[in-house]
Length: 399
Image (cartoon, rainbow, N blue to C red):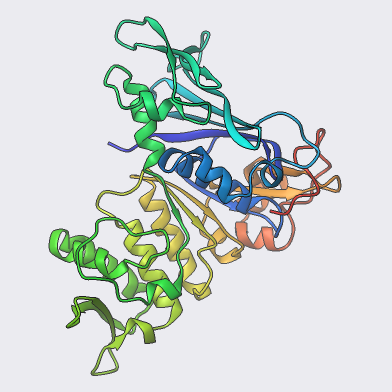
């Protein structure tokens, strides 16, 4: 059974995203737009949530410089992140809202809300959890009775605390969902390292344990490892195999062999693109994948011809995980469907706006006539729109 799918996200006062709402998110979603449009900021919104759930609000807050660096310049009120999702198709729509403000230099959860509607989306939403400044009500889902609870402090998440109890299954499911997200920050320099030997199930955000994950796949899921190698060989036809060995000091050394040559080469001497693609494929072929995967600018270090294949790998993986990608690559976008792509732009007023290519009649007509979406974007057919009615982003913030 696939994990929950986020159908909509709303962000308020988060850097350049002062008032942005995106609906109809797909299991595979691609964000495009010029530099400074808000793509990286939107990606960071998901990272902020994941860090808040795994390491705490204060950690996520401090990493980003606190309120002065997070809140849209000139804005007032709390920073707010709201996601709407379904735990399975046609299930009730759940909405989680997190509002964060600052008091005496410290972050506080000014409001945390979890509610649901009927599967058809009709009727008044029912609150499961509603907390303000560390105190609030939570409903026992078995009895329907609400109780008052106090947290250890105003910077604590009620979902993290109450999600450990069986009497709150929806809260527990949300806690597991967000805590399990994977946001990729793969680094070729980290991928070249030789880590201590030992199988590891999940690729790290930097990719420094790629050898450990390959060891885990080889020992437990050899068919998955074979699918990774086959996908890599399709993109790099000269590649013969990928393997590892254990050095005398107990470290894993990754080797890559090209078919024209008799000897393998160390990963430290392999091409940047081969290592980066190997890491992406390993991530996307995870036998127990993260429920949400974020990949930022996968085209870095990769040759243009492999990007359509990588886009298809992302789409295939979206059967088991929701996949979000930011990209500047027209070749990657050419392999995407119009309803999978969301464009972010900043108008003359300095605020980011959301554009759906499949809502533009000219674009859809040209696609029906055989044009490619990435090419239309490259030729500026997607951003040629009138000014939005209301501003949605602070002009003074960088992405």
